[in-house]
Structures are given as structure tokens and as C-alpha cells.
Amino acid sequence: QQQVKQSPQSLIVQKGGISIINCAYENTAFDYFPWYQQFPGKGPALLIAIRPDVSEKKEGRFTISFNKSAKQFSLHIMDSQPGDSATYFCAAIPNNNAGNMLTFGGGTRLMVKP
Amino acid sequence: NAGVMQNPRHLVRRRGQEARLRCSPMKGHSHVYWYRQLPEEGLKFMVYLQKENIIDESGMPKERFSAEFPKEGPSILRIQQVVRGDSAAYFCASSPRPGVPEAFFGQGTRLTVV
Figure (tube, rainbow over the protein chains, first blue to last red):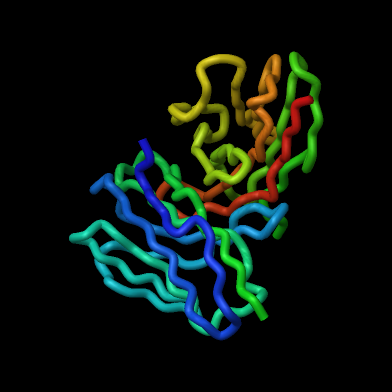
């Protein structure tokens, strides 16, 4: 059972454009939602994260929008640059104090064209 | 402060051999997580360990896979009698304690079974 669904699988954006990646979750016990960026041959790196008590979080060119009632969240990359070309994963962690096991979405391969 | 260290980076094994993957967490981190990433897929949780204890192994295949995190030394993920379907990237992540949701990933071990 895929608990976090991510779309699109791949995305091509022109330099300077906005990249938007969407995720939806099913488990209402999730209460922490990080995004990870992964370059080829590297491990995932934490990019930005949000808790459901806020609807938006912005860090530089990266913004997470969160819709708790719809159980959806999205990553917006403003002024996308070729260096942003990578695979992006949304993830979720439940509030059960049993550990921080991440449930990942399937990933979005972003290509930013110069 | 070194990050999460995984070795080897690449491992080739023939079918039926054993694979041993090592993970040294970040300094001060006593919680280790192993994830598997199949080609073109997202990461899937395998096992969560603290020093000398397996906390959650709900993502581990029932046979051939085992993990440990001894009092001294790195965490080890062991795969016995490898099969072609075990070919994947295996990532280790560490965190200082369960209440801190940010997990830091190593660069992974890419296992190829021939």
C-alpha cells in the first residue's frame, strides 16, 4: 500500500520558471512532512520540511504548501535553475514516538533547461 | 563533523554470495535507519536500530536479511544468498534521537548481483 503518492514522475521546466511537485497522503497519523533532494549517485538530502499546523513554509526559492483537510502538500521551486535538476522525494513521518521512519513518495525527476 | 559514512560505495556479488553493508552514523547519533531504493523507485524503509537493539524491522524481508548495530563499530546490513532482485541502492540514515525528525543520509551502497 503506497501511503504517499507523488506526482508528476518527471518534470521539465525552463530556467526561471516555477517547478511544482505534488504529494498526497492517506495516514492521518503523519505529522511531519520533509522534502528530500537527491542528485545521481548521492544520498537524499533534506531540503525543507513542514508540520501540519502551518499552511505554508518558505526557505529561499523553496516553498511548501500544505492542505491538511485535503491531505495534500506540494513543493514549489521558484526561479528554477539548471542546478536544481535532481530527483525530489516527499516523505512523511507519523506522530507515534516509535521512531522517525520515513514513508517516501515515488519521486519526481526534475530537469531544468537552460 | 563527518556525515553518515557508508561503505563500500559499490558492491558486486554473484548470486548465492553474502553481501555486507556498513554504516557509521554521524557523531553523536545513536539511531540508525536502513532504506532500500530499487531502480527508478522511491526509498523503502527496512529497519530501525539503536545501539544493540532492533527497534523496528517491519520493512525487512523475512528471509536472508539481517541487521545489527553493535555497541562498538558500525551498523551492518547483511544479505545472505543474494539474488538478482536484491540489486539496489541501500541507504543508511541517522538521527540523534527519536524526537528529532530530521534524518541525515549517507551516500549509499549500490549492490549489483550478477
